[in-house]
Length: 261
Image (cartoon, rainbow, N blue to C red):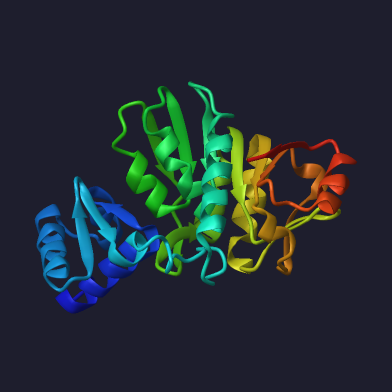
């Protein structure tokens, strides 16, 4: 990979994450720390990023989130929508206990959980999200496993999927899976837009004793065509307080534990 291609890749990653550590960039780009530091210096001199302790932040992301993007849809997200995801992630993290083994599916809301897990002890995290793995693997009390397989990316955020990742998941058991999807129907279940992830998602659900779905209110009005689980497969659903009374009433008729952040 030539330097200019690498710089573009790093800039896109930082803009997508809003913050990227040196270690996460090393894992993502596949070059040494000195090379990443030189590249960050170059991007800083061009006015593309801000330096912070341990990494870099997006200039676009620092402007009151105006240009922030929803990773699941790729459409501009309001600061309110981002705050909703952050509140949902904080509530989800409260369900995790020391000694747990959890799976974090790739997604914007699961990435927001990272900041709440760094200080946990005796936590085992399995994920197919390169950003999550890159941020948590260096935490003293957290051990990380990443599902290998085909690497794909949504708006610059890489994740693994495909046969090898599915085979890896089929050999594991986890306490809880934290799932972020593209669409939720309160009567039928959860859906995603990418058929490449279906096998992995279904495998993770089979491997987990507890299923936690994180979905802000916008997910209930969006459409996706591939089903990954029925509404009866969900144990806990965490949404935000803007979820409509009509949908809340439908969820109240199920056995799902609902949490509104």
